[in-house]
Image 1: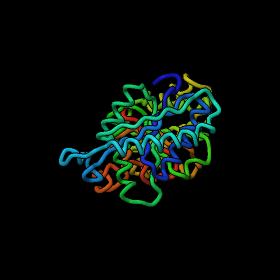
Image 2: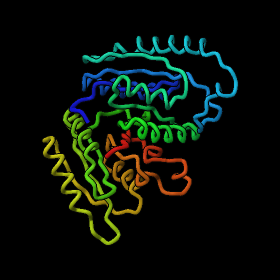
Image 3: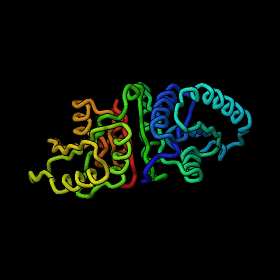
Length: 282
């Protein structure tokens, strides 16, 4: 993890949730002076949950769709660039092919530091697709993926919740939390579940606390939570303190309880009105 964010990728699908993602990207860009990349991938999947291109089965002319997408992105750029007040710029790109693969290539080619995706308010299918997409993007790109709803646009990251799921110190999440915390003058809450043998897991909490304090002077609190599912317990705690950001790892520990939730990879972000950053690597 770098000492700053230089490039933020916002995948665009020309729906209402684009506005939430772009607005949050502008907020970060104005604070961190980084660039925003609005990228649309022209793709015709056979089934919503499967990344199988229709062009594998029948010929498809992308020309008209590419031109349409380019024009729409130009309109978005002109609309949002007036809200940038830092040194960052807005770049636009139109790609075609498998969305996950093309976005992954783009993040590596242009050295993206974060991906921001908007989540649907009401559409159940879209929410499931988005959570699967977030999990896959975090895994393939190995970079932070921030999921945000309309409700996540009302404030800066003043309260950041960092849950711990095992005895390992999450260095990548710590460094990103410290980076955001410095810019937004945040308080970081490091939380962990009490273990079944009644051992509270104090060593890793204390070690994580020490690492954060070695990186930044912002306030940090460590808290032991009572509960069985880390995702649900973290969500409840975050709501209670009116948190502005939750930072999780792309692990089963952060899936919501239930077999169906694990099959559909419903991360904590699925039920969260609070913005959630998902990282693949600790």
